[in-house]
Structures are given as structure tokens and as C-alpha cells.
Length: 68
Image (cartoon, one colour):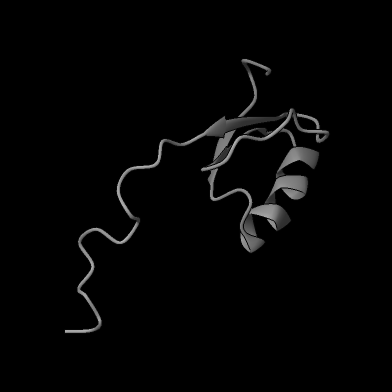
């Protein structure tokens, strides 16, 4: 990673939007940190570093139960 370039984080990097963003951001001058819930091998894209987010709960905490 270059200390003088912009740094961009992409949360949900394996989603439809995330997968489309990574190559575009990587082709620019930005260093990209790609966040995902799952482990990933090192990226073949330049300037992309993968990080894994911790999973907490069921993912719908705070959302009303649609069955009630």
C-alpha cells in the first residue's frame, strides 16, 4: 500500500456492487481494503487487500420480526 495514495474501504466486497467496484477502484490510484464476512485468498487485483469482518449475531438484530 502506498502511504501517499487515497485509501478506500469496500464493505460487502463480495456483493454484486462490491464485485463491480473492486476492479474500478483498483485501476485508479486508490488503495482498496475489501471487507467480507468470509476469508479470501490474496487478491489478483493490484492495490486490493482483503480483510474479514467479525460476525455477530444473526444479522437481523434490531429488525422487527415480520411474522408478528
